[in-house]
Length: 129
Image: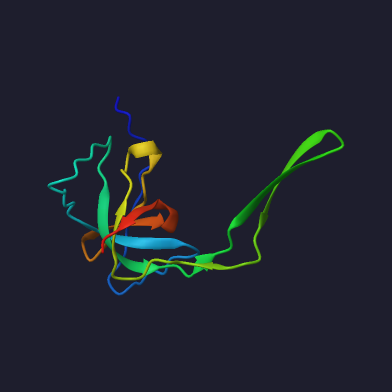
């Protein structure tokens, strides 16, 4: 038995269909990983490098509140009234964390026989300049 989580999902998009992510979702076309000559990184799973092909509009972030009333601690989560637009743009090359690192296994989508993954903006580790 391996340490891989068995919740992997694969979908196929029919020719002519389009996909529009919601909230802070992104669709990333998987590209070959280029390793640096000067920086050496080791990780448990394989990292994903890819080009963003679709971006959701953004989201209303959650606000976590906590306090103390009458000697009792309380916590509350509510949605902010300030909309946070997505910062990444279509066409940017991004790096996502290891697919098996910390349980990240993103749904795979095949568009025109090319592998894509559906992730959120929070999953992005860096953007190539």
